[in-house]
Image (cartoon, rainbow, N blue to C red):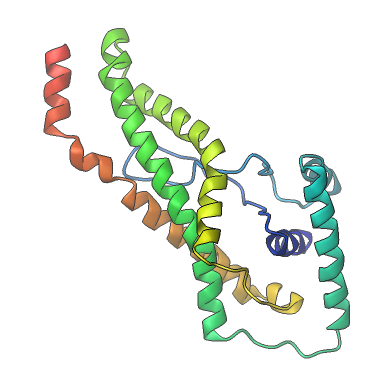
Length: 217
C-alpha cells in the first residue's frame, strides 16, 4: 500500500517511482536497461528502504512529495465513505497507454545502443584483444546502461511534451487492482515494442560485419 500511494503521489507531482530493473541480455531478446538515478533497488516495503529513497531526493522533490502525499491522504480520508467508482474502459486504456509510452523509448534506446556499441567493440577491441562475442556484448550492455542514466529523463520529458497527462483517478481508483494491472501491462507492452524497434541496427549488420571481421583477422 505504501508503494502504491507513493507512486500515485509522485506521479501527481511529476516525479516517478520506477520499479525494479530487470536483467538485460545481449541482442534480440531484451528488457529495460535505461533507468532513473533515483531508482530504488528494492520495493518500498520497509521503513529503512523508504528512508533511503527519501534521502536520495532533492529538497524541492521532498517538498513536492510531502505535499502530494498529504493531499492524497486527505482525498482518501474524505472518500472513505464514498462508494468506489469502477474504472471505465477508457480510463483503463489511458492508464495502459500512459505507462507504455515512456517504456517504448527506454526499450528502443536500450537495445539500439547495446547492439550498436557491442558490434563496434567486437570489431575493434574484440579483434585486437581477441575477446569473445559475449564479452563484447557485455561491454555493449555496460555502455547502454551508462547512457540510460542520462537519457531516461529526456525520454520522460519527451513523453510529457506529447501531451500525456497523469490519469485523473481518485485515490480509491488508484488502489484498485485493475489500475495496477493496466500499469504493469502498459510497461510490459511498451518495453517489448521499444526493444523490437531498437533492433533496427541489425538491418545494417550481417554479411558486411562478417566480411569486415574476416578482413581484420
